Image 1 (tube, rainbow, N blue to C red):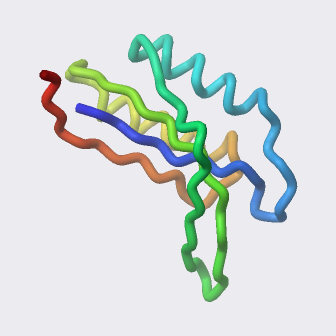
Image 2 (image 1 turned 30 degrees about the vertical axis):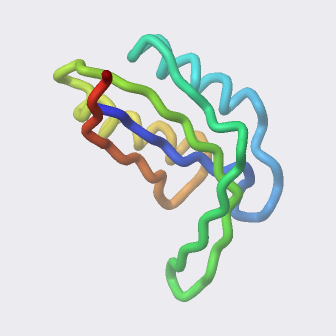
Length: 100
């Protein structure tokens, strides 16, 4: 499976997130899954919550894993990320891939 995590570059008040938070996250995922790829291009996300419109600048971290416990790990890890990045939610997706 390929997993993708979208991380905001800014807190909800607009202040810039500390680089250490991204470095810690990449290190933890590398320890768990053996490596990550971070997209150099920044994505923008728009979403609504509680009647407010939000626009986020995002960093995408990708990694592949065939570990049977990857999904359960990421469900728990999502809580860590929500707290670390002070977010209502963190978007994590899983995609079936075929390596040629």
